[in-house]
Length: 633
Ligand code: COA
Ligand code: AMP
Image (cartoon, rainbow, N blue to C red):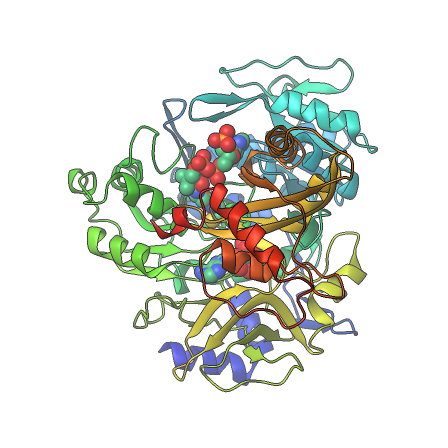
């Protein structure tokens, strides 16, 4: 079948289509009905079924006689280790860990926070939760203690599983003190914490609260898989919205299994048994869907890579891993290739490695700029497929269905809608616009299986954020257009979310942190273009009347404060103390105009601007920070 036939077969009978795809999953009780309309534009999939995600990701491959196949390869240039875990090993390790968690009281529905670096134990912790029907919430290691505390207070975990440390090039990330710091400020306290001690740093364990990963598993009965309802939350993953309070995206178990399994062949074009690699982090949605669940559910070998595209030890790392482990499909963020290209523009490292097993490269997480795609295509000789999706959906909204029929690549477009997604481009009033016209990208409800049915603890925020602006549609938060061939073009966010090195961050959240500085009266944070990371945050602060301190000192304190409160991942290093911020007469800060000034783009003077002279002050402040000259280089 061609892509158009597959898409049409879904359009003709959406429920029948997904029930058919559901046959590839092992059910305890198979679904009789696909879609459940819960009213008020809320939908659920496969709610009448019973299933277990860990069984589907692990045990069933052992039962099918593939226990000796490698499930996880840990390739860690930062620690010098390569480890392989077979499916049977993984089953035994996960069952034992789940048994130990159960012995300490973790049950179906309890929340468990996982705060771990890129080690197989992070996946084992996720799968052990899934085995028990406990709801995990993985927190990215680059977030500060405060962000961890916010998540602890929101999802109220019974248990936290953490590692003693992570390893960033040139420094050890002390996870345990970060965890302790988070628990000092969090209102909610877990019953216990499990600490995986790494040889690079052995952490102090707090008596009565902390247990050792190995010790607490000793002598307990392994746990079997607990059946859960199809709509049972598999996990909560927090993502940035417009405020400092992150949104807890809820992932429903059954839809997630069905959809991810579908994508492995139809988008990523891998057969069970082949090696699939997503170079991301378990803390992000790419890590959940394509380091852990997707490849394992489909019976692939997944790679847990603990390193960076460059500097661990060089710009040849990606090619080494692909060649050494015979990777078939490779997925990463464009920023990673920009980093490689910067260090190895002529692809000298690529020539040293055999990439013959690699079929295609997939990019997502941020806009894929044409230069990066063209460079990657030219250097590797492989197809490079951009695809567009979000934490909220958990899998591709628009992509190239390479496993059905590779469609011609139009550079700059993530290609076409996947079955399940009826993508429309709407104007402000919610009317569809003609092809080639820019608008808000929305998806006609219901969304397909695996996508978020709600936000944790915040059903009203879910409706307000995604469903209220365009009734009957899911609002993606991205703006763009569709062309005459149905190809999608993603242009920008419509909210205050920015994308820094493929990491989704809230400028609103950073403004909240800056506003908490005692000398700051007012502030604005914008996302400016960056040649490596795509975007970088840039802050402008106005001081409280009467403050006479050195502005440079206050700037440094602001940078330190964002690092302390949000974390190093925010990459907040550009800040300027200014007298005033440009505003409309009604007092709204003109952030979009500030972005244009910083990026050196032409702009129209906003008709409602209060005092145009302030824009010159902003231009000078930006120039002092090295912009827009730095961008134009
Ligand atoms: N734990 C602790 N700190 C972390 C971290 C983690 N898991 N990940 C990143 N950080 C820190 C970094 O050490 C850095 O700290 P620094 O300010 O002290 O240098 C900071 O957060 C910013 O990190 P990053 O944005 O990763 O920048 P970088 O300069 O270290 O590396 C790239 C740049 C492009 C090489 C890197 O961003 C990269 O590999 N990106 C891939 C993107 C990706 O996988 N995105 C996921 C979505 S698909
Ligand atoms: P996240 O939820 O962290 O995956 O971030 C999702 C957001 O990243 C999207 O809403 C887009 O703004 C952006 N994004 C992801 N993939 C792409 C892509 N292929 N092209 C353009 N933007 C993308």
